[in-house]
Image (cartoon, rainbow, N blue to C red; front, side, top):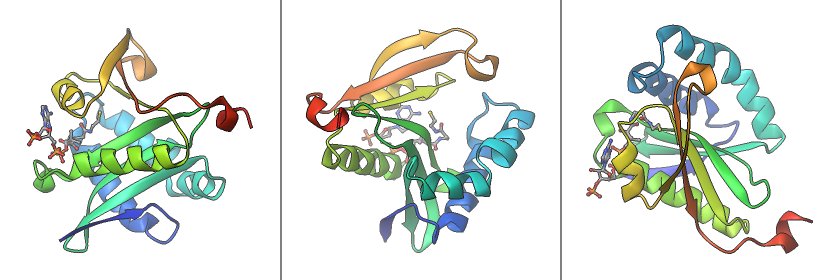
Length: 168
Ligand SMILES: CC(C)(COP(=O)(O)OP(=O)(O)OC[C@H]1O[C@@H](n2cnc3c(N)ncnc32)[C@H](O)[C@@H]1OP(=O)(O)O)[C@@H](O)C(=O)NCCC(=O)NCCS
């Protein structure tokens, strides 16, 4: 049985278990030093605590049989747009629709909050067809971007921009 929980201070330790596992094994485009830097500095537990308390990040954790299996982390809406920082599924849980579930849940949340667009980037080509399948368009390319790696930008427009909400 699967269930999705919104990321909170209560389930943060479970989120970090699967987050760290997938960062270490699922991103061959990132060096071991970069993965360690991300886990220990930019995405350390205290950073998550601060960003969640101040509502700058939100995310979802998907469980299979009560075990943390997949996650999505995003920036809160700004100007009607939400940016997904990370999406990952544990190696043994892939190909079962978990990433699709999480992208749908993110979209629902952004829609509910009055947002009109989802964005994300990838720094490898392995998921290009996956994002197209999930309804995203490739909207840009940046050479030698963050951490010196090439970067592809994807976006999905999910509604009309609503200045009455984002200029409030
Ligand atoms: C990419 C990733 C998130 C996909 O997760 P997943 O749960 O296996 O994906 P889903 O099962 O929801 O797949 C949905 C559909 O996309 C397809 N798909 C999944 N990964 C794909 C890929 N890399 N390329 C093309 N199609 C893919 C599936 O076959 C499925 O197709 P269907 O609807 O015809 O059955 C997962 O492989 C992963 O975590 N990889 C390592 C970390 C990573 O790359 N994260 C994304 C960072 S940009």
